[in-house]
Amino acid sequence: MSEWRTRAACRSADPELFFPTAEAGPVYDAQVAVAKAVCAGCPVRVECLDEALLRIPEGIAGGLTPEERRRMRRPLIAPEVRSGSRCGEREAAGRALLAAGRPVREVARSCGVSERTAARWAARLRAANQPVTAEGSSGGHRAPLLISRTHNPQPGTRTQEGTPL
Image 1 (cartoon, helix red, strand yellow):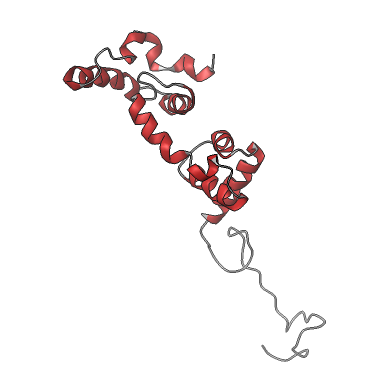
Image 2 (cartoon, rainbow, N blue to C red; image 1 turned 120 degrees about the vertical axis):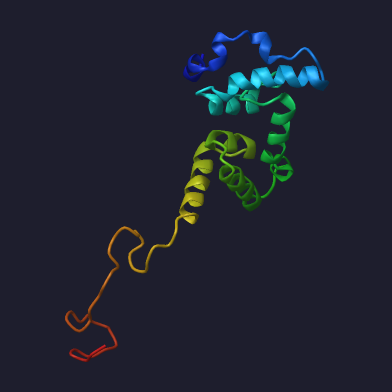
């Protein structure tokens, strides 16, 4: 059993609570509301939802109904990824999934690539989202690179020694 499951709020609730007996209408809505109330205060709701999106087709899980989870999954697996798209399209779809907050492992599985490839996509996405802080060194936390040719002339520069810049 996954470690997060031991901390789930539903561990102390009746399991039947998460499988409404009504199929629609106000009774269904009331049953769903009771189950979702348990999920709302759960410390591992995110982990549960990740699991539910991948492996739990029925019942209330991760705070969502089966239909709500189906609607969430639809945009996550783009049709071109499933049909064996080209590399660039696959990466674009993978980066979109990563930007939406999906885990690297799930993106790798959805796109049919290794976890290492999906991790590289995630790194590129993070790098692309870093703000440009200043000119100079690429590490924005460092001081900009300054070169004074008047005090330390370099061979091959176009200025003569002692010529002001």
